[in-house]
Image 1: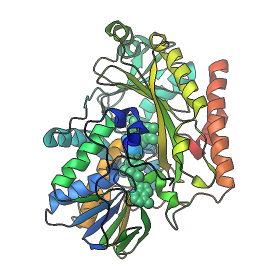
Image 2 (image 1 turned 135 degrees about the vertical axis):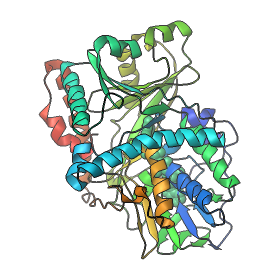
Image 3 (image 1 turned 60 degrees about the horizontal axis):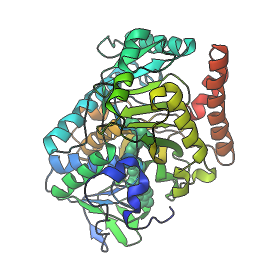
Image 4 (image 1 turned 90 degrees about the horizontal axis):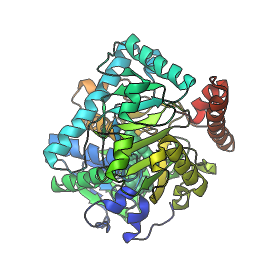
Length: 464
Ligand SMILES: Cc1cc2nc3c(=O)[nH]c(=O)nc-3n(C[C@H](O)[C@H](O)[C@H](O)COP(=O)(O)OP(=O)(O)OC[C@H]3O[C@@H](n4cnc5c(N)ncnc54)[C@H](O)[C@@H]3O)c2cc1C
């Protein structure tokens, strides 16, 4: 990673980091060699939830988290704030891999995870602006409406009812989010809007209070059985957990495990009351539409629109650099899309622009696992659905380490191994071609009103 200055520059990482209370000055780095029970690389939500559940289950356990920058530096402090029940692999795909019951159990576990995050933030007093207003996915063309119907039909096949996801008429959808060209959509109650930096920074404070040692500005240079090496010393531990998501390819031997794909966001100035009366989003449901190259938005607690999407290029060799967080053309496209979607916002000032890498495994299936023989564990590959999934990962890794034999450890993503990504330059060619195909397909669908076959083929490379 390119070094990041150790001062207020961390504020510029996102609107969320800019507005999170408290200092962003890094905490102490690892002072030298150390022996603990569990060592974790990465203080994003994966690492911190794992530490949280372990420390709760066994208060005497010695846990150390080594973070290259500061807690919440990665995607956890920069995302769209959808704490949702979404999972990157579809029900049908999970059913093919592990059977129908396992697929349903995975999706039910995700729904329960949303409430578990809500329970913990309330219990621990983490003020992350939690609002469980669900998600409205707008259908703004006939093809998007067909996809919405297919999504609901698939949910019904697997036994998910109206309380889980339902089809909306045009009027019902517009009532929730008064966007242009709305023909219908879907609504699920299983999502909360949050201020993600308040969540991750608050969680870091809670785990520190439980005795977990969080060392900042301590980059891990190598993860191995029973040891995690850093530039400051070695942490020896019975269990070593990789929680580095989009940054993983920089670790030795890991360069083809996941790819970092960038998602970028903008936030407007606070919008006036009459503008909100036009738009809706009362109760702060998160929102998007049915296009291939996904977009996502939330009404923030202080009345802004935070809005994001993919489309930034993938960089050769899975490189991750601060300069890749900002792509003016993508910011421009996001602002234009937001204005088309919600014309009442078209002239609003954009106060923040940012981005970050998320992690995608080759088969688009997130996983959490532990190799008991080596003591090495991991979780990641969440694509754009990690905010809540990291909590399920943390509980699962805790149960695997403590060998509780819980139901969580039998979910189909546990110990799932995705194959490696292709070697370069094939990876670069495939991913960027996929991104371009998705954006091309969205434009073509807008023109012809017919579904694009290109997108469904290429989308499996980088869609989602
Ligand atoms: C712009 C954007 C929008 C998103 N929107 C949503 C959303 O609305 N909902 C949703 O569910 N998901 C969303 N996601 C995805 C979600 O944010 C991530 O899946 C989730 O935060 C991953 O958490 P993590 O802890 O695994 O990884 P990260 O938060 O990326 O944390 C990894 C940490 O590891 C540290 N690290 C890396 N390498 C090293 C090393 N060698 N040594 C020590 N530390 C290291 C990093 O500095 C970082 O702090 C979004 C992502 C982005 C980028």
